[in-house]
Amino acid sequence: GAVVSQHPSWVICKSGTSVKIECRSLDFQATTMFWYRQFPKQSLMLMATSNEGSKATYEQGVEKDKFLINHASLTLSTLTVTSAHPEDSSFYICSARDRPRSGNTIYFGEGSWLTVV
Amino acid sequence: DAKTTQPPSMDCAEGRAANLPCNHSTISGNEYVYWYRQIHSQGPQYIIHGLKNNETNEMASLIITEDRKSSTLILPHATLRDTAVYYCIVRVITSNTGKLIFGQGTTLQVKP
Image (tube, rainbow over all chains, first blue to last red; front, side):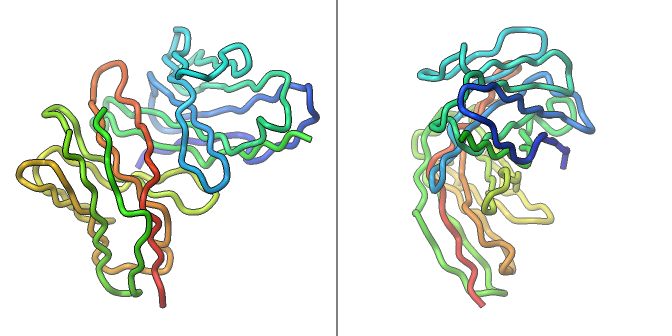
């Protein structure tokens, strides 16, 4: 299957600072990427849909000014958690849609653990 | 997108077939059935998907009932490494959306 890579795999930041997580599609072009967050023992919650060259579409209840998403190229999307607080500590996962090759199948990155202290 | 219903947990003996059911009684004609799994602390892994015909790949088989209201994912020879949370998702494939909405999934425990 297609490869989606996230960086960093884990990050610890101080409360009030911002942290950026990168999501790259390594062997395909992704016109659409998706960002999820997952708390322990819970399912994945979709945060936003990121389309290359346009503004992201956020799910209801997700603060767009706090979770900044940029999808500047067909292989890279970034999620910036601004003014992070301990309650933002979570597992963040991106995914990308491999449209041309595999019938719109969506592939996921390895995830990024964020701990805000 | 239609919702799905899965049992919260299942056990399977190593080497035996694991049959994971999923109900999607409100599925629409243009919605596909997708299966993903998530091993602890990793991103979900794509397994298989189908529209109305049964599908098979190197990982699993997907059996979809004729009325498309339910499906079964079959892992033919489960191993300990197949222990994971399995998600059944129905999804419309369009040119601009096609997002995946996850339910609670089935936690499959493969036992020696």
